[in-house]
Length: 636
Image (cartoon, rainbow, N blue to C red; front, top):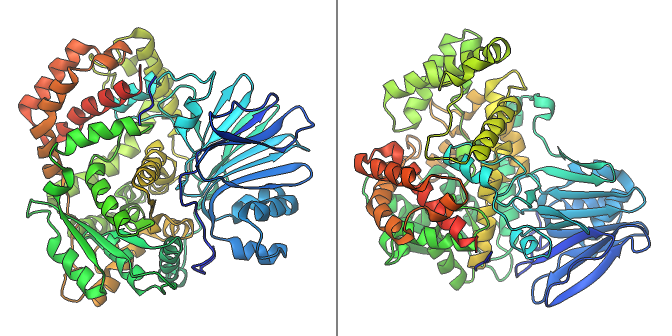
């Protein structure tokens, strides 16, 4: 295979200036060294297993601490640093790993719930022979692991793990095939058979008896939500400001500024936040779309001007370069350890590089606002279950005012898609599975088998059906509320970890740290537990930020703004360039050689989709090009 290429004091948070290319090895034989490396036996050199740390020459090293029987490796930044220093009575010069070591010595695993920040953490307790691998609550810093004949390897980089001897580089065929079916991999899976991920907010606990993962940070333990009172919800402004300050604490910042409520909120708070010595106000980085229906240039310029922010305004045509969006996205696949999710990434890469050229170390986004400031329409199912017809009508009215979608389509969603369907289908499926399992194969709505061009290999097709059955069990409602179960998807869906990892890798390639204030764990905890109708104001979603923006920018219409959706523009770009990219690839040869698609049938499907050019088919067209280009870049 070829691998191509806190506290709220601004001075306390620290992140490495360069990518930290390291791995830890829990091994009885020592790690396999890099060509240029530093090996350390961190702890346990006299026992059957020792914790080793190895890093590439020239890369930043994670901070470490060693006790009599315990070793800690910490990569990232600890937001709760000062709180822990005071409680543990440690000297202020203690590094984050030393704080973690002291806290673990005092509290054991109970320490984990006290941790906030951006980090990957490894703890080896040789006295108990237990290894802990933690990923921060929101997963901003990735963490992966693989097993070899000499022990367990852990790293923030999939590429580093794959470069080690005796680690298989085989692609995960089932995960790639699931992608075509919009099922996505399992939570701990990657697109490589040998490499697993530690999901966000979870800890991997490894002992001689085996390994297990559990969530150490959870806004709804056991599926039970303690709903906040209106007075408690008022802490939103405080926590939102705290989240932005935390992101600004890492140095000079830029902001991906669209004209939407989320990024404008981040920009407004960042512009008003205290600026440490030697730092300028954040730099606004704005992309202008050519389609007037989705262009937000007037709002973007007005916001930056009102806040006194320097601004880079880049036309979309300039940002994508001469090759076009799809060609640039396909090319980026060679640099990513998973197929690209955000097809817009090339244009934001262009913006990010504008920021780095102007001294930005961090770029803030509005990502997370759509998930946590809004109400999922799955609330309709809970309202129907309670026969709350007034609540269903109120929800429909609020969503109608908030989105540019036909009122009838939204009503149909309230009645069936997010209403009766999720209440009826699961019980019917359960009954059929119990009394007549053979019938599942007769109804495509109960189990839709892969299309004929996907998974022609019989063994792979059987594995996909098995995975579907397992997923059906795993996705069974656990809280008694379909609304709460849907909220958990924003934490537990594999796509969430995958997308955050993509941002991490994208930032490393661009030379900046990409951070998302709306994904701050303390803020998410509050928004998760905010009663849904308190997220509306004057019949519109995102009420917690909408009116404050209307007061800050009284002439920009934020009190009535509806979300702009670029689906039609995005689809037009796909249909414009898809045939050319297909011809450059020469078909889906790599996927066919892996047994993931039937090449001839896939070509017929591709041509059929291009011919009818339906809006909803564009993503399927892109998926074919995306997976083929990624698989080809990661196979020999």
